[in-house]
Amino acid sequence: MKDLYEGITYRNIKFRFSLNMRAETIDIEKAELLAKLVKIGLNKVYLGIDAGNEYDLKLYCKKATIMDNTKGIFFLNKY
Image 1 (cartoon, rainbow, N blue to C red):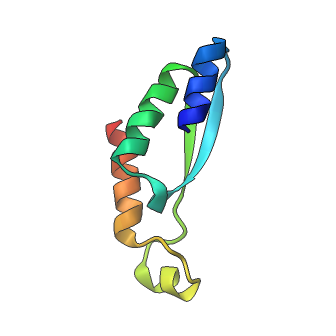
Image 2: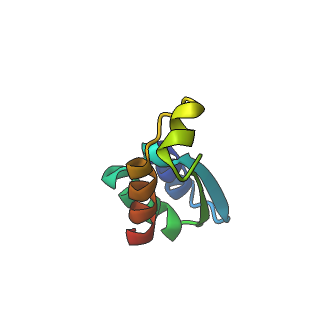
């Protein structure tokens, strides 16, 4: 995402775009970078939340936990 931000700003490209992300990959650093991307055209982030309960997450061998899903939503709303 950092390379994407730098490439767009360096080239002064103007366009709207969206990103797909998994909930367990979002942290403060990525949320702050997403906030920068919004300033240069990011208009949607699709957040992959595989299930709303631990049983299903474990059943389908997902890496994310309920806490990861909650944290991802929190970071996106905050930033």
